[in-house]
Image 1 (cartoon, rainbow, N blue to C red):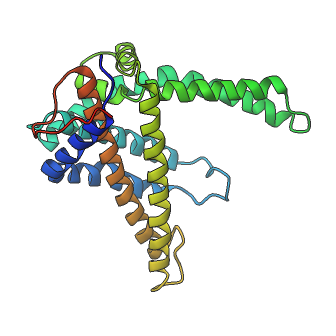
Image 2 (cartoon, one colour):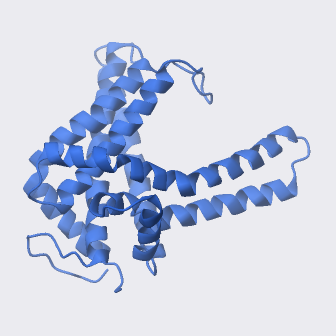
Image 3 (cartoon, one colour):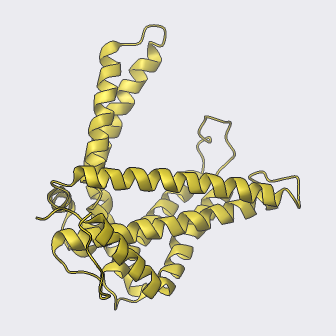
Length: 267
């Protein structure tokens, strides 16, 4: 396979969003914004640095995550199939959800278990941290980052190909071969940029809300307005990212380019 062209994928992404943005809007609102707001309202307020206590909100969180994953697959379906309807894309995402989740758990769960075990060892011996546990945690983290990049296209594969979890992992590994650094650079730059934008929007929204009310806490009207704005920005960024992943998959799998004529700078 030829080298991945991120610039071509980005140009195709912009063309698709400009042409079919009206299709992505209802998916983003229903599958990203609404679950995020419901979870934000239902989850109890936790002390800084601590997780909320266990409760019914965990079931709500699980449903919210599953709905968001279906939305992710639906966005990619729309980015790959220009004639697909919103309803068909969501139904397709629901049908492919199980295989997609299973594929992620196959590689991610062992990483989480190993990292958690090593971290518990370090917490147990805080006065004299284990060198072996520390090095092991660093190694597991490095392996996790490497695998996360190699598995970046699992959602696109799960959307486009009717295969099982193991085949999804194998296909993602194949498509990312020889382009790890390019995919890592994209993931890093997009993540840093998205985080900076979200922090800026959250700060500006909080300041704007406090011009009208002193209470911008998580259970106040002001806090709800800030949360809505943050969720909208997060949804927009998510759609852009998933469409980009879909176009990278199309390029790597030899599935052709978006209908609009786009240049290829070779980056």
